Image (cartoon, rainbow, N blue to C red; front, side):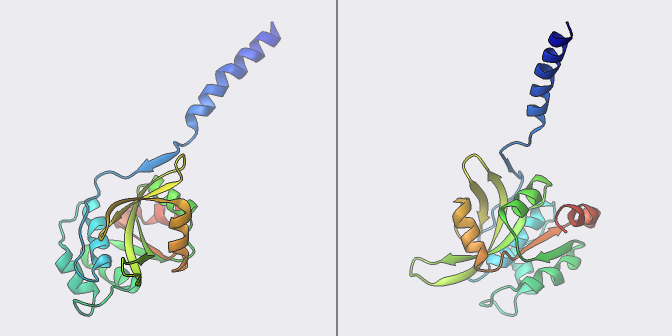
Amino acid sequence: MRRISLALLFVAVAPAQAAQAPPPGYVLSGMPLIRQSYNACGPASLTQVLRYYGLNVDMATVSRFTRPSETSYMTAQAILDFAPRVDMEARLYSGGSINTMRTAIRNGFPVIALQTYVSPSGQVIPHWRVVVGFNDASAQAYLMDPLLGYVAMGYADFARVWADHHGQFALVYPPKFSATVRKVIG
């Protein structure tokens, strides 16, 4: 009888453990796609994230405060400087990885990643885009790209274009999530 009980115990525990495994993917919902104007991928990406958190801001306003001119790129520092203007916090990171991206997304934080974009003419351009999801089964990251729209990018390509910029990324979030961000990302 003890053997049967132990066997039944193992059968009963195995499905419970399988149910607790994280899903192979996750996508944040409620992220609007904001199309960029010339060289405004940074302000567009930042606007997407701010709207995800329910802030009614427009890209022109974000752009005015984050770029020195209408034809300039947005720097990473501009994200840190702008966040307090809208009662948000921001942190910059380097060395981001697929695991970092997964952790942020699973915890509800979109990732504003600086990656390389190669234009149709072959020009290599630094490009901000928002990572909103992933799927380990298909090895893809899901992006809200202000230039290209909705993009599913394979992990190998995603890691390669991110490595060009040392895995640089920003998290922007309401202050109430500060402790969570520090705990799960650093």
